Each structure stands twice: as structure tokens, then as C-alpha cells.
Amino acid sequence: MVRILIATALVFGLAGAVSAHDTKIDPLLDACLEKHPSNQGMIACTRSALGRADTRLNKLWEQVKVAVRSFNADLSEPEQHNWDWLLEAQRGWLQYRQFQCRFESEQMHGGTGAPLLEAGCMLAKTEERNAELLDLLKLYTDQ
Image (cartoon, rainbow, N blue to C red; front, side, top):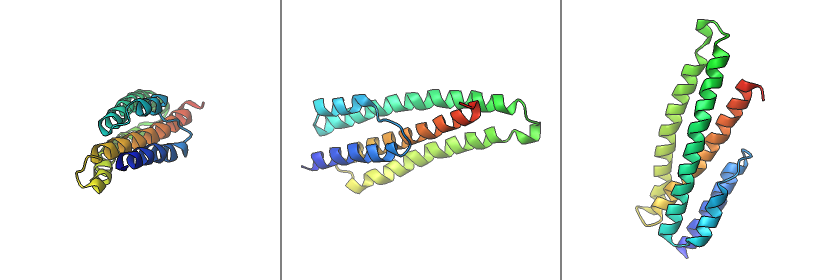
């Protein structure tokens, strides 16, 4: 019963967290969770989806980096600090994601549900950041 509650919280929690940014959760996640309803299966499915979300994050980050640097090329040297701030924000976000998700997973006090909560949190935070980076990309490329 606990596993069903965790899986439900994971799926609905992720959907709620991400839908606010008009981003869809990895469609392979639901299918994987259906095929692998055990705790270990759900952890593996969620970590796999996190890997795909991280890949999207890295691709978006590279696109944003190019767009911001291209935008900065037209600015004078003193006005080009937005890249430095964005880079520091990304570094801070990576730390925030790691520690926030560890904190959230501690609700299980090290129980078998903790890895699933942590992976689900990491996935949700990553998809949220993907939406933010996509918004930045649109801003800097006038799309």
C-alpha cells in the first residue's frame, strides 16, 4: 500500500509541479511505471526518466549559453555580466536541487521509499528548470 501511495504521489506530484510550466513529463515514465510496479522498478523508471531530463537540461543549457553569448556580443564590456549571473544561478540551482531533494527524501527516514522520493524530486526539479531554460532561450532568440 505504501508503494502505491508513493507512486501516486510521485506521478501526480510531478505532473502538478511540471504542468505549471507547460512541460510534459517524459511519456516513457508512465509506461515504465505500469510495467514495473515494484519499488525497485519504480526507482529504476524514475531514474531513467531523470537521465533523459538531464540530457534535455544539458542540451538546453548549451543552447542558452550560445544565445546569451550571442546577445552579449552586441553589448559593451560592462554590460556583459548577465552571462556571469546566469552561470552562477545554474551552479546554485544544481546545489539547490541536490540538497532540496535529499531533504525531501528524508521524510522516509532512510526507508525503502527514500530513493524513489529523491529521484522523483530530482526529476520534477529538472523538468521545472528545463522549462525555465526554454523560456530563457525564447527570450534571447526572440522566438
